[in-house]
Image (spheres, rainbow, N blue to C red):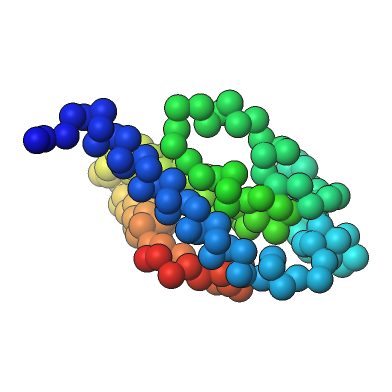
Length: 177
């Protein structure tokens, strides 16, 4: 007999739950299980200025790690109501929260870079449109206009490239790929 949609959904959720339980058991064998101190204790004893200053100079409050609480202590679970996520399981302590913060900062930086790039490309394309529609009968004006078109076209070419930043590995590799 064919399964109903509700039954398929229940089985799917049960499989997801089993995966989460399995990943939690794997996480227990990671660095957190062998650590003598929590990440919060370690963080407190080290110079954090290289982390905090770039954020503070941009008006962003640096996250604190005063204790070993995980993400659930800082984020309202109601924000995720209706969304199947195991984000709180991924960040049960200060180390997990720090790992999620790194991922969040990277994601935010990528999205902001895309927005800046789109803005610059739009503005350059508008300027190029204006320059191509301008009067190029005067040789001096034509040369300056063509030079500006060439400069802006090169800038667009640069903006169409991607850049790569390297980071030290901060998350343990999982067996699941």
